[in-house]
Image 1 (spheres, one colour):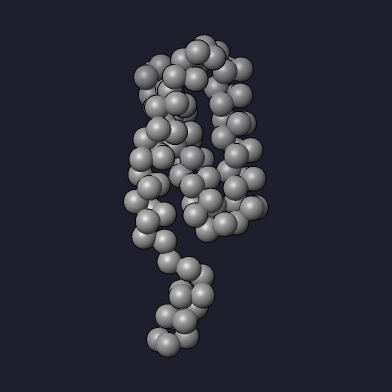
Image 2 (image 1 turned 60 degrees about the horizontal axis):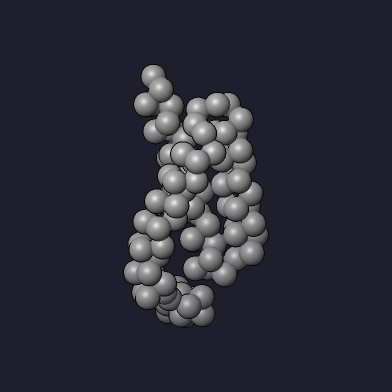
Amino acid sequence: MKGLETFGWIVFILSSVTFLISGIVAGDPWSIAGSAMFLVGVVALWIALGSVTSSQVRDQLQAVIYASSESSAGITAGRVSRSSRRNFHDAA
């Protein structure tokens, strides 16, 4: 059961990091703020509930952030501007 619980927390962290990257790519300050607060809340709850120690959280977060930054490089390289998307939808 402990492994499944840890997996759940990691999925929550991955989802918040994914939404954070999405907000950064879109340039949406509300998404960035909400995702960052969600990430901090999840980590705080994970530590408070005693599932892991703070050093384990730090190590796992560093791994998640590193993996996310590797994948976000491809996302930002293929970024489409909002005006381009609007022009595409207006033409269709």
